[in-house]
Image (cartoon, rainbow, N blue to C red; front, side):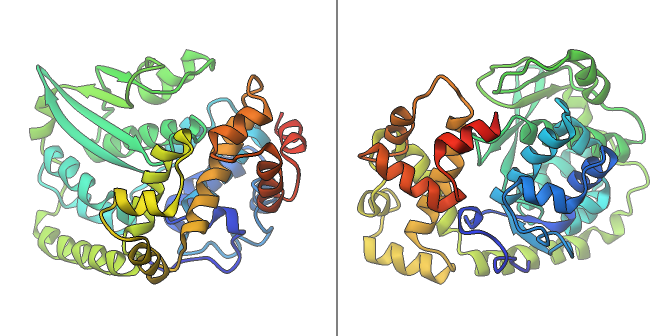
Length: 346
């Protein structure tokens, strides 16, 4: 998967990636609401030409910024749902082709857990049986992101699953970790039901019988060669990315609220020396400071949208000793003071 870093501002250059094919539904939903790519990029803090042409891949943080910008510019409280509605088999690239060759939905969901990363690093799927329910869960790698991220994922899964089944598939219950004041009617139209909000996790419950339901018109004869291709892509991706930046990011998300975002501590969490961690990050084309800046900038944007938080509180939550240090860093990331950014976002 070709990385797209040369035109990307530093704050967006974290370790996660999203394929260009996965970005297309976002662009389609925005265009349908009169928002063109260049305007979308400008609102997201990206170069106007960032999506021209559409890159093979872009940073996950840039995708999230585009998703947030699309919702604001379109003034659409259900933008995430509408992005999910635009999902097509091609959205998932090679991973989507494997799903088309699965013998049943149980196999498709099992492979989703393995190959989802070929489409994006936004989060990961889980599947479990709980009593009489099968439960699909999606763990976001960017919990500070706007709710549109999670809603786009669940809407996309329902749209793609229904297309695969040849009929509407509806969960018996759905719950999201975020809150929402948007109208329930659109949730019912797109998802088939009104979800619960403020839950412990992002989940969809459904009848376990669906797992043994055959995929209509699946060409299972292609399954071995398609899966072999997906495995090869997975190996190439692992060799390119190394996976270490993702682990560092996860460790920083745990440590920042405690003011412990230091190289030595993170290295200890990962069972290696600080020097070894620096070497592995360099091998993945990153550095500890780059990952730390990307995590802090993403969290800072989320915190600044919460008017009840003062700048001193945000600085402390991000692990800065002084508010002035936070202000200086934020100006480096965004080109403006945090107070001005907050007013503009409002």
